[in-house]
Length: 561
Ligand code: GLC
Ligand code: CA
Image (tube, rainbow, N blue to C red; front, top):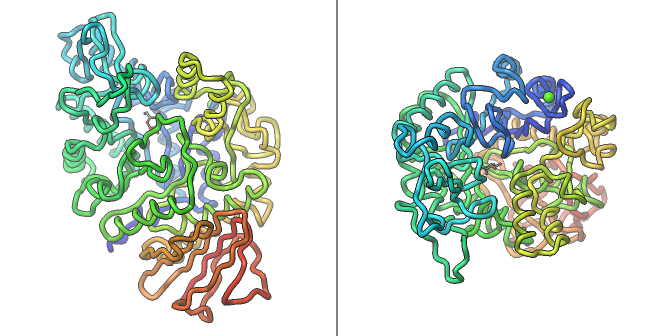
């Protein structure tokens, strides 16, 4: 297997608005990030993924870009960015940019021109269609509720937006537009950025002619993922992007691709494909590949058996063929400890167990800000405390459908993207040390207990456990490259696997439950030569070596030589 830096790296995702405010306007910014570089280095991360910081009206917190070449003044200036890049590099940290190529803001100059007349030279930079009998051009549903089409009075046509109406989709059939994107990407690479996360990249190509999705119940709009996700031509586009731009630089790339399984993922990340280094898949988030996406509001409960099946397929299918990106949370998802662990009684134990899981899988691990201190879901009582466009659209939509408010709020508590967007909790002081002003979104109530300052002081904290895991991953290549093998596939509480690389084997034992199941040491593994690398409980001295009980959410990693 090819060994390389981006396989060995651990990535830390920064949601700039909520990370650290340096000037008291209540919004996190680039100087704030700079002030925390030492913190991130000490934690042991290698690559910082910055969610979009480009000029943007902020209808979707920066995922609506109005100028790809400028920094959003809310976050600072281009000088601030250059300083961040320099200071990061001085510390051996790399910077990965989040790039949105599926759509722009409706305030991007291209779109302003495009909408101005049917004959404008940039008309076909976007996707315009006439209505059908005064109705939408087709029945596709937007990720953020309602139709993907918005009527524009100026030319009496509709434009397509898979996300909000402020995010018109770019037309990748227009080569001139695509070359403009290449030029812009090269410009950032020449500046010295170390990689890209390509937002919503699975959707840049839509089914030819934009046909209606099947609609047996004759609803006004229906989910139509298959007609705009992972289509064959996306691969052509990515290969061209790679040939013309990316391959000339030593960078890392990760694409956001919902709605696929590992076999299809190989089309993006297979070693021979020359498209992307890795993709973010959604099977473990939606537990249902077919309907994967960000627009679903019914958060399906998970079972460990399902999770094992999904992760095992990804681990084995991609082994020596491609590369995984492993994550349990990000700026679009609930907090992992709230969803997969226990955010109250076993917050610390379960957060450590989940971290052990992520760091011992084959692939590059992604840590979302605050995960390293076990931040939990927001669950605000009032809709007025929410900021996310997806959440607010859903609230209005549910109201129109006559859904009881308490059901709507319950869905929002479980699923809203704002669960993960509350400000980073730095200390127990005012506003959790995030800002000296009024934060743009409410701070989580638990910041007195959950914050980096107290976590750094406590040797048993989640923070120190992450540090230890990240350090181990650097000194034990088996954690990065080892071949994964699932043990006890049918155990509903224990997730157990080995990883093997050259002479070394790891045995990972994870208790995903609040029970105390008994683990029986496998005969084929030599207990006598084993060494406990890391565990989230003090090992019990007088336990039986052959058969022992695990504590709630206990995690242990043994090394066998
Ligand atoms: C991706 C981003 C999400 C954004 C959407 C539209 O899913 O992660 O935050 O709203 O794309 O750009
Ligand atoms: Ca600020």
